[in-house]
View 1 (cartoon, rainbow, N blue to C red):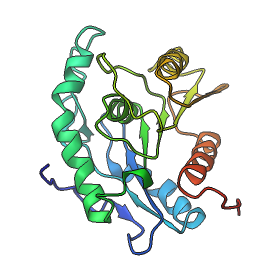
View 2: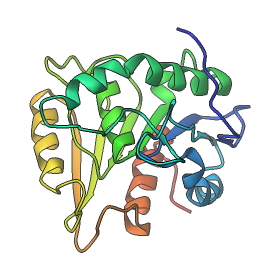
View 3: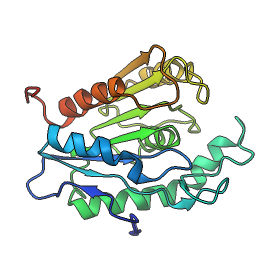
View 4: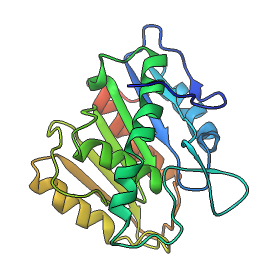
Length: 223
């Protein structure tokens, strides 16, 4: 699989002697740098873990700035899945570059994907398609939009976090995804946050932090 630039400076925390790698995947029209404040905090909370927050491979085609994993121009329920499939190669190259640079090529069981919105769509696709049998996935404000059939690595646990006041991604997408993933034999936690919109809040981040700690550092006490 080819390498691609992760653009900018996506890494916070080196790979030397690290016990795991967390890769953050931003939403449409955003950039990897949006996670910088959260990553700075998590670097303190998880000193044994390396982090990456790459930019998506394509320019956002609905504005003059930002990046996207796939275009949302004219996206519908019927064509979303084909757009996900079409962008898999570029997504995989981006992920591979992060993993290779961090030294985790043969350690996917020590990698966790954390996505927001469109980043969550891609993170869930990476797992249910069987391409990336990682240690865990956190999906904020996302949906399972990948085409069937699904061939996931059943050992990968999933945390779905969604606000019940989300005006962009209907909150019903979370329990819908949880039901499908559970029928595939996967371990799924679906956490609905009251009064939260299309956002990554401190409460959601705390839940994700605990999930990552359990996935990568089992037995490690909370600070």
